[in-house]
Structure formats: C-alpha cells, structure tokens
Image (cartoon, rainbow, N blue to C red; front, top):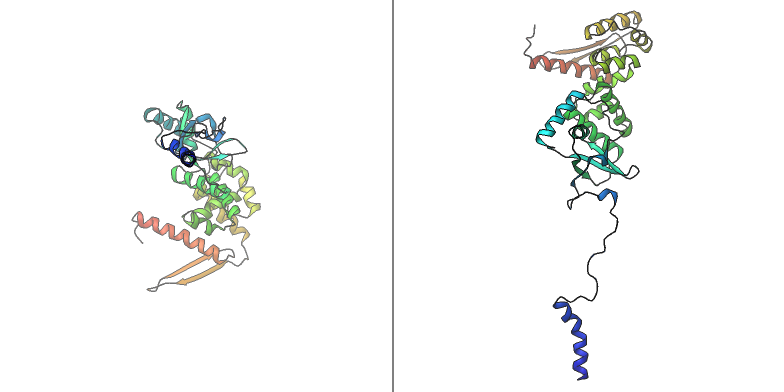
Length: 298
C-alpha cells in the first residue's frame, strides 16, 4: 500500500493538470498603468488610431508654410470621404508625444475637419536625424513643392549632416544636379531678395541669375526692386559683370564629339571643371526642353 500511495502522490499533480486543475495563478501579470506610448494602440503595433491632440509637428520639419486654401480643400475631402491614408509618426521620449515624420498637411487638415482621432503608422525603429530629414524632404518634394528657400535650406542641411557635395546630394535624391545647384545658389542672396522670392515678387530663376554677381554688387542690386524678371536679371548680371571683368582672363574650353560636332564652353571669368560640368548640364536641360517642345533647329 505504501508503494501504491507514493506512486499516486507522485502522479497526482500530473492528473490534476490533465483535467484542468491549477494550483497557481496562470493569468499574466499586467502593468496597472499603461505606458503613454501604448494608449489607444491596437494589437498590430505598426498601425493604430489615436487622439489627434497626442500628435505634434516635428520642430525640424523642412516645411513651415502651408497654403491655407489647399488645407481647406483637403479638410473638405476628409469630411466627405474620411482619412484615406495614415500619417507616419515616431515616438519622442523627451516630448512624451508622437512627432510627425510625414503627413503634417493631412494632420492639419484633419484638425480643420474636426476629427478627434487620426490613423497613424507608428515607426518603431530608431531614425537618425539624417534619415528623418530625408523622409520629410522626399515626402514634401513628391507631394507638394517646398517654397524655394525652404527647399534650399533643406538641401543645405542634408549636405551638412551627410558631408555631401551638391552632386552627391542630387544622386541621393535622384534629382537633376542643375536643380540642386540652382536651389543652393539662392542661399547666397541677401535677406531682402530671399523675402521677395518667398512672397513671389521675384522668381527663383531670376534669383539664381542674380546670385552670379559678386557679393558687393549683389548687395547693391538687392537695395532696389527694379529687377523682377529673368530677362532683367540676366541683363543686370551681364552689365555689372562686364564692368568688373575688364582686363580679366576668362575661361574657354572646347570638347570634341562624334560626327564633327564641337561643344564650346566660354565664360568671362575664370572657372574650374566642376563649373563647366554644371554649365553643360544646364545646357543639356535646355536642349531636352527644346526637343520636348519640338523646337526646330535653325
């Protein structure tokens, strides 16, 4: 009997477990207070819908100006059809809130539409400042153009963070190097000219032409508002550079192509091959534009 009883005692726990008897609490112990970052999130942690007030714009966002009419149109669309795409957000521990990576226009429009909560894609992995800036810049460039000065500042920040030159930046963003160089040239302009470009009084292309002037002459031109068009800007540059280039030796390079074609690059001032490359890219862009518009060769 003793042997039989000892055997039964040894297997009793297994018998109890087989019929569902538990001697200890098997429920998982949950935290009594949820982490702020998990409030309102679903089981699928990558997507969720949270209160719109728990999201804030990223203070480092390249875009600072949003067209009021465009926001109102988007808000009306959200009222009629709802939010069609989630915004991308990341958690900021210092701010104890979610910061917008991309989709600030939708967030602002959703506020105008009266939404109390908004659909989000929660980015869990850590992003470096460079990665965040790249995402925000590319988002803005693909969806709605940045203001010219905002775009130039964003390009400059990316170059500084990555230690890139203009050509490397253009390759990373899959852009024409000419666009990048023209945009960066706007940062050379005095504050008065930048303000005129932001207000639309002076076109970015005219600003680019004026940026070719030496700093002293550029400062003088910025004190007047007479230059507004690209043609006027080009004429001003030719006139003022013509006065200062007397007696100076310029640059002239000839490049030979197939079938007896020659490409001649000239400038009244000294330059280097990087500047020649930019000039050729600009000329190539103009040639392609004429081909697209079916302009006949005279």
